[in-house]
Amino acid sequence: MLTRKTKHILMKIISMFSVVRGYNIPVIIAAQYLSAIFILAPEKRALHILLDFTLFLLVIASSLSIASGYIINNFYDSKKDIINRPNKSQLDRLVSQKTKLQVYFSVNFIVAIIASFISFRALLFFSTYIFLIWFYSHKLKKIIFIGNLTAALLAVLPFFGIVLYYKNIYPEIFAHATFLFLLILIREIIKDLENMTGDIANNYNTIPAKFGETTAKKTITFLTLATLVPIYFLIEIYDVGYMDIYFYASLLILISFLFQLWKSNHKKQYILLHNILKFLIVSGVFCIILINLHVLIHGKKLLKL
Image (cartoon, rainbow, N blue to C red):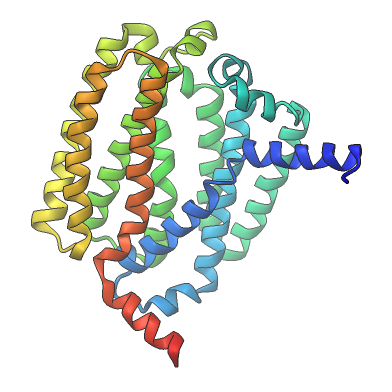
């Protein structure tokens, strides 16, 4: 039997895990490594990339930066989340606001140490990135559409850190980044529809809070149609191997998504749409391996040796 004190500590650990969205961190790490192997540095051997210690430090620093971003975002959204996410908010409040700030500054300090081992440019990059996340959480998030754009930009920015590291700038990188950016941007506006009650109560100037659900849906429709551009380039112009199957499937899912969007008018329906987009983003991470299946086949042979 666990003692009362042990249970209390365990609940605080679970609460902090919820605050930093620990379930997202492994996906973020996987996304960066898979992107490096198949998109950002395809000319290098996968084993070389996996054993690259500098890349390892970059991935850890960016993952910790994102985790600290979740903390500061949770800190500023605490009042809004009581309305929008009462169950999660109840769990998150087991950790005090003071403790959240202490962990936030500690994590950022660790990021600064790791970045300084890489290079001065890396330290400058991550310092700027951490500042932008704080500025977004504190100010930009409440500004109509600017908050959505910034959130989507901050989500893809760590990948450009790896691009700068390898000094590879291929056109297909921007096509992949544009598709991901648009999906995240659409998801951010869906979240605004989902969280409209709390946003209005806490003076967040989001598109649905300011102009209504119809305008938000029109914006989402336009952005969803805009995904056709990177999808076309990735299927018809660039060589993405068998990952074109993912993009064809994404196209069908996004068409279904739009039909469902215009039928939706309730929070539960918006949560479903949010989860559809989350599925597209996460599945897209693991479908990157379809670009070159020979890497997996070769890796399997090496493991057998």
